[in-house]
Image (tube, rainbow, N blue to C red; front, top):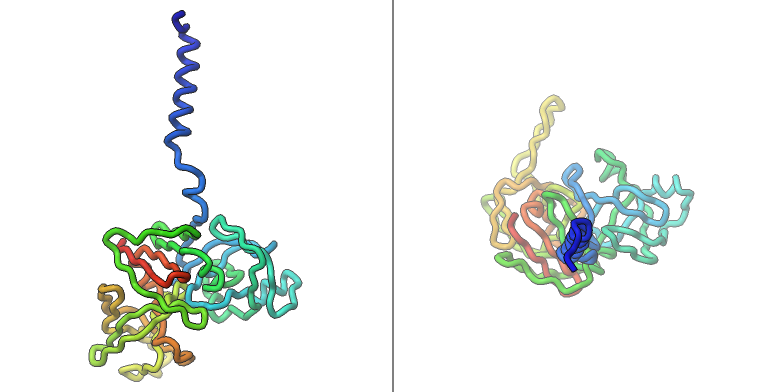
Length: 265
């Protein structure tokens, strides 16, 4: 029996719907992903820690996650360590501890209000993908393949902080060592260093930026990379590599198996 026009139209709609369902990516492919942005050189994303929802700093170089003491006070929390469930990038993580700390020194100049810092103690449970533009952060528990055409570097976990080998130079001396992967700052941090020139003491003159003559990571050379001197080094690392360098790549970090993949953008 031939189809009537109405039945043919209805059948085409059903077939189209079936095709859309068949071609659409499965939901799990998008699980564990969130939009992020760079604020004053630091990586930021939205998350919720219990009923404290808002923007959090993503800092892979921080061994311990932290809750801003101002935000804790507003929530009526007086403990030095607060435990709540954390929701970030589509993941719900039960019983996360955050140390209450004064974060004004790091975040008061930010364009957004920072509720806390999500560090390596939380992020180390996952394979972490970070892409700076468009800014995305993805957390996965599955084994991830290395990037085609990228480079894989060994990562050493020291006192909860992921370190990777790099080389820096001031144009005269070359230093090779282990550096923290620092997504919470823009500039590289260098320990046991001093300025090559004494900065001007004239308050009417702008401060001269500190630059490294060269920084090499994963076979890539960065010249005149911004840097600061870290006077509070712990002796475990030679410093840290910030987002001025890291944002040049797509990053994939697996702290459990000890490797960092870099793919040029």
